[in-house]
Length: 159
Length: 261
Image (cartoon, each protein chain N blue to C red):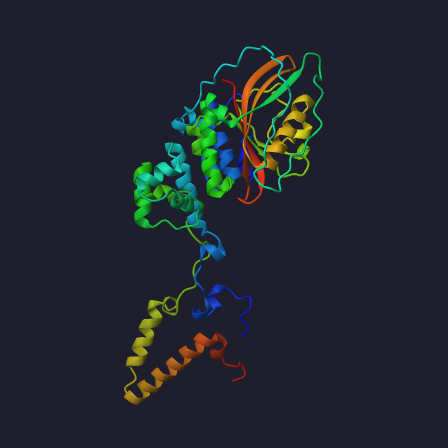
């Protein structure tokens, strides 16, 4: 299977690398929070050094927070919000609610409750323990093939 | 990136001085690369316009009362320039042909270089120079490190121009931000986005191009006393030109501050 140019979901977890500001640039949410901090700081009339002193960090840290180069921890954001006289939610205002395309459902989420119930009832109805075990193995082998290649489960139409 | 400012248009007389401060602040944020912050500032201006409710009393109250202009007395000073040592060994001073002494009957423009030790005579320029030194030591005057709030605290907002001095030809230097409080002989002619070579008052533009080019090449502050009579208006002011950088590496921006006090 060709993996070149495929989306993130198709890249195996072991091959994925962690997003870093250095390689990928600041995260859009960190940029947004930084811009909101900078805006609010200006409205309050504090310069970077004054805010840094009140929060207990260096002014370079404030610079990096505002530029999105460094991510602000939750506790630090709370301190900044206190100094600037706004709730923490102020810094997230204007952010879009999220990715408009929903994340792909996990295998468990794809099954409806009815499917699970039916499967359970049918499995329990097999009186022969050896047959139940065989069915379980069969299902597990299907599941493994499904992870590797979903088309492997498709039966030829001629059969 | 240019959308927010264009959306609101240039400052007009309908905008309160406070909003002009906020507009100026937004322009500096935009120049420094903080588009999100500029957008938030502009939203504050829009809110103020729509509701009449001030979004930023601290910024709006900064330096609202402009000092009166000096009396319209024209004093002729010698045009000689003192020698300026370049900061870097490879920097050179390019001398442009000086503008004629008079372009229009009665017009004069005289610019006298002053030592930086005399900066103390202007509190605003002196404080701005101190801040610039911090910035220069930090990152060679990178615009991204400029904190516009410091300009508010120094009461310099509205009195400073930001000039793009990246072009080889000083006639192509452009005014990125024009200090809205700075009076002008042709007040409607000098505008943001205009190149210096396009300025209609050649007497003024030739001198300014020359000084700006020197400031960029020597990468050092220049302090001048300027006295002029242009288009029947007389001005006397102190001017400080500070080199900045758009990327922290090459000097290609100038912060030009004036004090009419």
